[in-house]
Length: 105
Image 1: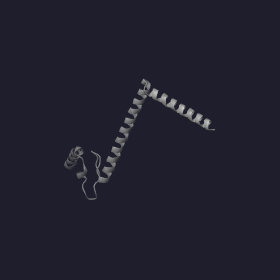
Image 2: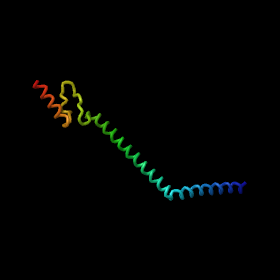
Image 3: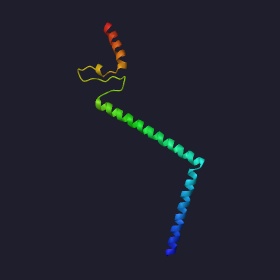
Image 4: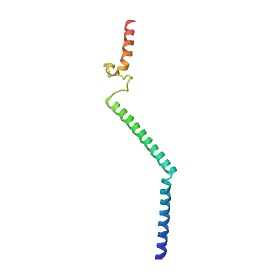
């Protein structure tokens, strides 16, 4: 019984070493290196996309908590207050020109 067990253990170790050796040999071929580089590029692209999505989510969350709006959009102020303090500089010129025109007609 003991010899049979050692035979099976030796055969298993031999198969394992052969498979690992074949994988190592494939990894250093031109195709293997190309596959590894493509995998690395894909991983970097996925990481970049995840970081960008996390940054956008964090900015949205921060804007909601602070009551800010994206640039160029108006937000209604509190009741009785004016919304002009929450308007970005790019939209104040167009808003003030329309208010001037409405006031003169």
